[in-house]
Amino acid sequence: MFGRRRQHDELRAKFLANRERVRSWLDAWELPEVVWTDEFNDVPSPWVVLERDRDNWLRSRAPFLDAYDWMFFGRPLTPGVREVRVRWHFGAAHRFEALELTIISVCDPGYLAEKLTLAVHHARLRGWRDEDAQPLHRWLVEGVSTRPLDDAVRGSKRSGFVLLSFTRFPTSDGNVIVQLTVVETDRALDGSPLDGDGVSIPDR
Image 1 (cartoon, one colour):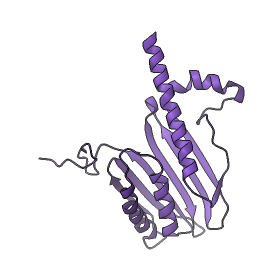
Image 2 (cartoon, one colour):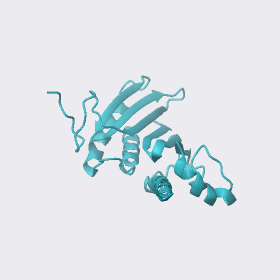
Image 3 (cartoon, one colour):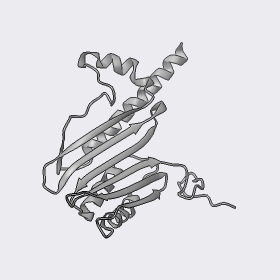
Image 4 (tube, one colour):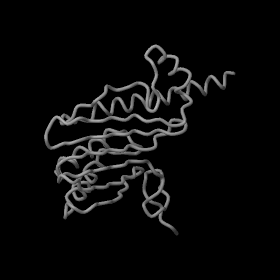
């Protein structure tokens, strides 16, 4: 019985840590160009729980979720930004699975690269270092500014244990859809394993 209780407490602590991580990230990511359509919800998607039932749900159900998301939709406050979408996805045992970022806006490479870099920087990803931000920013500027703008652009980059997948698509009204998906990995882009510092171990 004590072992089961300990497991329940450990799983609940992981859920609460994830919730606080996402909440802190949303506060830290400065994006004054949009207003989020909903306040932060303690209960992740896809669950809808009445206010009076939340404490019980958090105690009894939250520790044993197989998968859940926190999703955010940003409504524009400036003409240059059309839409911002965010999805934090967690899987079994409350493991972080992915951070998905989408911005629809005018093609401003500096702005888009800065906002996406800050989003990644504040996400507290495994092994992420302050010095990883500048190379990511340069890579994103290059991806967003690739000509012609009517072409789709795709690319992948690894920084330590962090794997980033980037896409840029044109819209029919002259804007761009920029998407960045961030996951954690134990493998380099060529499939080779990483050591404890996130450095690729070459084949011998």
